Length: 626
Image 1 (tube, helix red, strand yellow):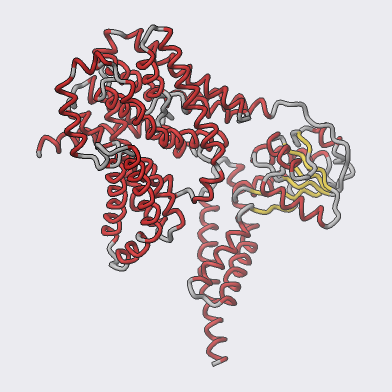
Image 2 (image 1 turned 90 degrees about the vertical axis):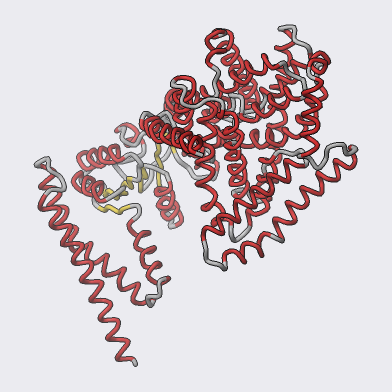
């Protein structure tokens, strides 16, 4: 018992030290976990033989992750992505396996051995990729969605692979391990519901198992969760959620299917459940811990003796495999018209081998497909490719993405062919609303924006807009700034918006300037630059949400409206004094010092006084009515 507690402490302290440091240096949590594993395993030697056993346990984190992914996907969403799932995923598996099989034949490997290696290396790391997508918020991008489709198809493809790989067994390996084979066969029969069944019966068992997960998840889970939720004990709900995931995983394992695929299917079935969010919040912490443990065991399990004895061979194989996978993925990105930086994200994110590679390697050794020595080298290559993956994401962030963002804005400015009463600088979510309102009332506008992707999107929805930097005097002249009545400044970049306001106020003082402010400090700077009307982008919506919150909490609608009006009245009354205090202190270089802070605290006190006054008035009126 004490020994396991010591190991748990070592793994935890390694994660606590390495992961925050990796995050601070922009390396991501996955690389932090991997480095932690390398340090406590091969480098220091604090952990050793138990790593493989712990890794099998930690792989449950991948199972939980796919359950949570399934919860985010309604069945109709899964059906909508069927073309990417089957077409893109199927081609990725097929072409990658074919490429590695061909490479194996070039090295004069038996075709069965080459095909087995090709299938193993066709898999990518669901754990690393989805975890990194989640951290970097890449899952909603075009490249992220396509990568997810491929990963999901790979998880499904594990099933036919497990059926095919035993057929590739080498006769000489079978002859060398008759006793081991008998032992493995007994073990398999003991833990399997399908061992020895004929093909038709095996198919029926699998179909019945999947049907049970789907039907049971839809009809039986809701009464169960209602019963448990009625107890009011959060820990029992957590236990029930884990029981569900474990039960599905065990069932899938007993019928020879992937536990990850089974739990993903269960998640999809429960995606429309009213308990979905409760399930997510209860299971997510376990996913994070187990995935972190899994990554640590990958790092700790690297066999450095093989690496040092065959350094150039292993590194060459690892880089070669990642390059071939990236080339195949890039080709598929071209075929499926994945554009710009998303093409690179798709190719780089899936260029590694995956955690299912370890499962398949172990399976092939048990079934006498791979020699143990080759399997050890292949496991090392898989682990190293996973370790190099965070570096590919860093390369994407630092090199690829900035180049595409730069080049997308590097094109020549459009020729502005018309002039309008109002020039709108910036057609993002704020500027779009202003533009639609003006056009709907017959006001002619000229829209400028320096982000080419936004301009292209506007044109697809028949909104006329020109690509160009509104801070350029020549573009303002062409847009008719001399004849314009006003300019609406709705740019995202705060410094550029201030620069534009200063230029217009200096060169065209007759033009009214209406500006969007990001926050109070930005509004002061815009006012200082000369903007005539300034509106905070979130001010009015925040007031509306605040009033709605009061109504939902039981405040009478009329009182909630009065409170909202009182807040705005106080803000308007004190805004001039706050601005003057800010202006004086900003000139002295000591912003938000004594005077400003004192006035701001007075503002807070006035808000409380006005709220209390409105509540008192409302109570008096209600008592008179009674």
